[in-house]
Image (cartoon, rainbow, N blue to C red; front, side, top):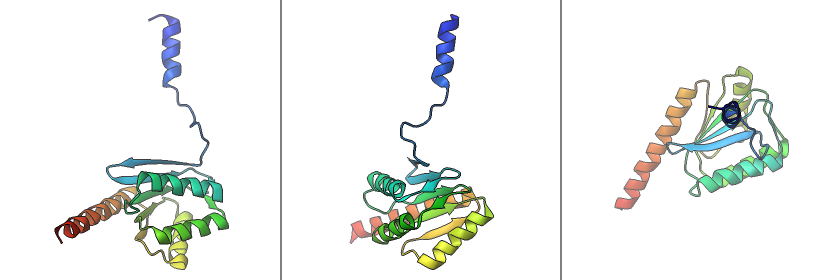
Length: 151
């Protein structure tokens, strides 16, 4: 392989930042939406609106579980938090929050106790346990839909 072709191949394999510099990543895997908040992310209302819009676009039913990987140092603006609480009251996404950071876990538990989400919401220190819980919510929804279809 000529040196130019090898150099081109190496450059093609290099990671490139996303076209839109968002402090999160979102994808769907085996029926569960994965939302990863990047370390040190500053979630302002504009970013929160984009996250909510993308989740809604990936699941119009509002029932697909969302596994959120909450990195340390994520800060959520008060108005962005208020927007999230308002929108989540209208939707029913089960939310599994995962963080390995004890301080983040404490803040998330505080959020859960103060805002008392009307949808299933759990905080985990194990990604595997969060994944298992999210998959269980998916199975519960499938059973509910099967029962409704029979009625």
